[in-house]
Length: 341
Image (cartoon, rainbow, N blue to C red):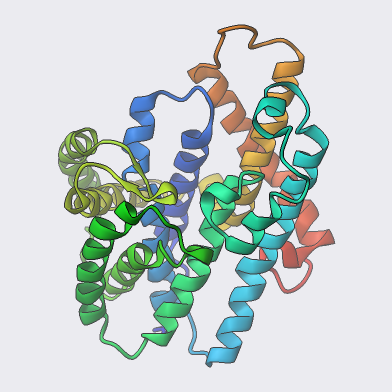
């Protein structure tokens, strides 16, 4: 995407940090259902919007070949590494505890179909990896459409996205490598590019705080009214229109809050390393849950609660620091880096 060459925007780093923290908490066993309803209403669209924003405001002009190589390096190589990491763990543990009932009878090669298709439900060895193929095809589609004025692209993508979300899920089929999610993702990716060129958000901390406060109530009400959203499972609640509206409201709230917290160093670090956190936190959850099960922490009908969810989320975020250090030095390609840092 073309760029105006702006300096690094710490609001975006803070927004990405808030988004990935919500993702981690939303995936933790024991988190309240109400939290899931609220967070899932916007957190995936937020990531697509931020990706479009960064591409428009901070990207550089590249040819198709260079763009393709860059996307393969930054998205598909991590996809491969963290799939096989989860796959090895699955092979070693699939006959243990409750996993035996779910996966013990499956052939050893069954997870490989998830690697090939990139479809979320097939990627059960590391479920969050579905996002990487979708971002790959979305970014590539945006590159091919880069000559279309961004306002027109947003309008057309929104119409297509509304029709797609209203019709496609009822067909009960899935398309490989995120192509069925592409029409939804492209709406928010294009919207991010549009926002990057306009001063829609308040500049002052007070203005952002007031805007966030004004949006929280309608966003929460609409989220509960529309019901559960899960883009990975092609679920959009009771109304596809409310899905798009509420995704925009939740995204705006996070962008406003990010202005309040953009000066916090650790939050910036998290925002600059979302790929590591995204790809590793589920694997860490698997390990911690396995240890807890072997230790007898959740016997019988006992289920993990919010305290457990918060604990494993904090643990996963903290573990990303040494994991990032190790990967950056031993396998920088695995997290989209060109060289050791």
